[in-house]
Image (cartoon, rainbow, N blue to C red; front, side, top):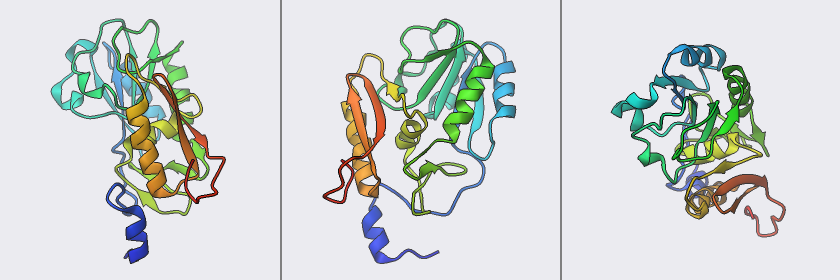
Length: 212
């Protein structure tokens, strides 16, 4: 459907408006020695909203490591290699049992893969002031339009209300990136950060017509 000139000016270059994509491009990366957790999550999560990939922690292939996952789920204490490119980016992380040191974000420790599945199902269904995940990838905005190229906002939305905690880094830079996108899209949300933690909240003051 053609977009009017006013809409194009509103969204600018940071957000690309398209029709829904079918087949999920956002991914959960499962790190485990055996493929059973991957198969379990693959079968329990909506394939229109997320795909599930698997790698052994010590054998994380370059093709898997090159992508930025929407979420990481793992088990074992062996530090995964090839995750340096994820430092300073936003994604959620959940772990069964003791987690290895030096993960880019602080993992949420869960007692079982069933608990992780329940967490992820809940995360995929988060809606905040009308903002929610779109099938395939991207976000469905409160007015019904679609925006792509918003991976960090997708991750932060689905981490609501707890947010994401970066390890050994400040959250200021990703907070600036997400805040700029929120302002560009005119969403009634704001980004909060304290130290390495970053989270979304509903905006309280819209006197100037933009998110606080």
